Amino acid sequence: MRITKAIILTILLSSNALATEMQFQYKSPSFSGVGYSAHVLTIENLEATRRRQLAEDKKAEAAAAASAAKNTNLAKFLNNLESRVYATLSQKIAEQLFSDNGNTSGSFDIASNNVQWSSDGSQITLRITDAAGSVTEVIVPYGSLAW
Image 1 (cartoon, rainbow, N blue to C red):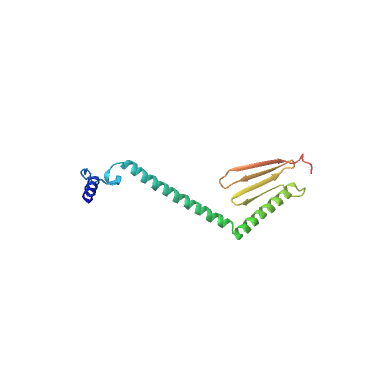
Image 2: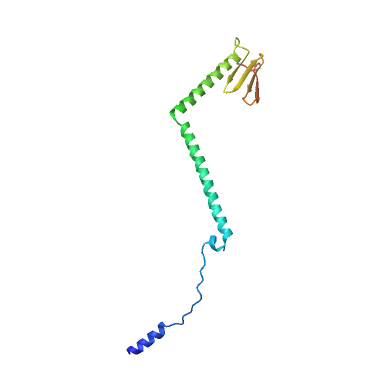
């Protein structure tokens, strides 16, 4: 019985050995050349994506720093003060323009801009020349307006 089991076990476990010649192949396209162009394109795409991401991160960091600088208490104070100075200045000019005994013309420079104004009794001409030389002219007829 033992011999029978040993023979059956030997028959079951034995099989034809099939073998082929072993061949060495590189898996990396850099060495084998197979699929090399796709490999190079993939690497270039990864590098370009990383460069683009670094540039975007740098821009975002600069924007965050600029935003943080604008949100300081000192920056808010200076912005508010500048706004009030401009508002008061424009109010004083308007009072001069519409006053019966005020000046009929004048000019001043502010922030590299030249502002000239004049009144001939029926209309007010406001001429603004910026630093680049571009001129904006506003004409307001006020002779027919009822105050």
